[in-house]
Length: 352
Image 1 (cartoon, rainbow, N blue to C red):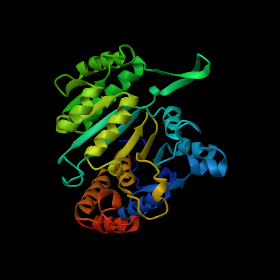
Image 2 (image 1 turned 90 degrees about the horizontal axis):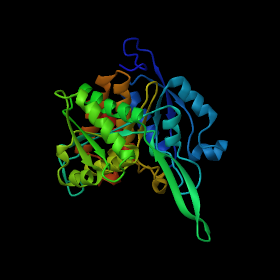
Image 3 (image 1 turned 90 degrees about the vertical axis):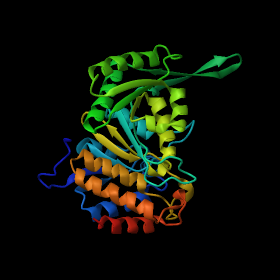
Image 4 (image 1 turned 120 degrees about the horizontal axis):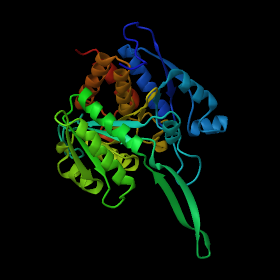
């Protein structure tokens, strides 16, 4: 049970709530309404980050938000906008590194029956991504080339043996705790012989400690991407490095209906941040069109993390029934507004 849990005392659990940018405030309100109807034990401390914070406070990550996170050690976060190429550094990456949120957990399972958009039934894959090293911790430089002082861009990432061991161990322990059968380690050691090779070498040593309890195999990342399209049911738990994990987790989400159904958890030794992993979708912000499912499923992960497993199961079951019966939002082929979907979900919570 998490250090944040208090199901025995019944006391409210303080949570830093970050509504985020774009559609973030809308899906946050939908999630708060649903969790209130569920009777979830969370006491919200609402804080700003991202573009919304930059516009109001002059920084994408205000000190008040950091102090709240340091106090609660638990957060629910809607999407934050990050400029591409220029502008401020990703707040998500900053938070992960600052609070040592070394494991990113991305579960993906089939919630909607197979149709033209969703080719597979019965998928249930968990991707565990190393969250604080690799190229996302890189230092970027320009080097001159000919007459161009910025003719070459250099990015220097890194991997440590200690972090490789920690994330692969986390994957095996997750598999044991959740009744999983196999861990697949994904790498590119055939080309990145040192950086990815260290991950593979260390992962094999960790896997040997679990021999006879959890099956183990390994895949080169490009082969894994192809096999996820051809036969994704062969995968159970996947563990990989930061960049590969970011890419493959979105691919897996696509197999089960898209990022609108994709929750994420960032786990550290003393803190956890749960989030919707899709973008801020500014093109539909304020139009009551957003799908809140990803943030709701992230809330279910947070309920599990804090020891309220029965409430988490009840929420997931209600989400599944609502998605299967309708109404659905536009990203899933329906016409429902955010409010209509939320109302239907809250009604479904009352169904045994």
